[in-house]
Image (cartoon, rainbow, N blue to C red; front, side, top):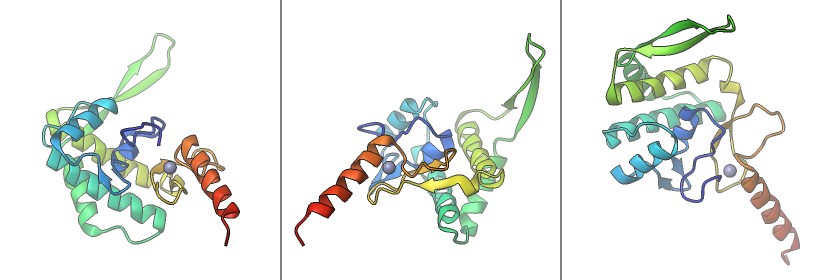
Length: 178
Ligand SMILES: [Zn+2]
C-alpha cells in the first residue's frame, strides 16, 4: 500500500482507487469521517451521502471482481451502475488549444453527489468496456488484493512496497524449518 493510512495508490484512475476502499477487511468509506478523508485525499470533492457512495462502491467492486476472476457480473450491480450514471449524463466539450490541438473535457448539468457518483459510475462502465477490463488485475500479495490497471505487462503488485513485502515473505517461508 502506498499510503500508510488509506489504500490510495496514486497511480490508478479514480474509479479503481474508489473500488480499492474495500481493503484488508476494512471499509475505508465505512464512516462519514473516513469517507470525507478518503475523497479529500484522493483529490475529489467528498460525497455528502457516505452511504450512497459506499453502496455504489460495493457495486463497482463486484463488477471489478467479476472482471478479474472471469465470473458473471451480478445483474444488480450492473443495474446500480446504470442508474447512477443516468443521474449525471455528461457530454464531451471540444476546445481548440492555442497550439491548434483539440481537447475534450466532460461537461454535465448535474451537481453534487449525483454528478460525483454519476461520473464514477460512467468511469466504471468505460473501464469495463474500452479494452482496459482485460488489463484489470489484483495485487498478488495474498493479504492485499488491491485492483490496478496493468499498463506494464510485468506488473504483478499494486505498489513496490507490496512487491517487497511478498519477496520477504517468500524468503522467510523458504528459511522456516519444516
Ligand atoms: Zn498490493
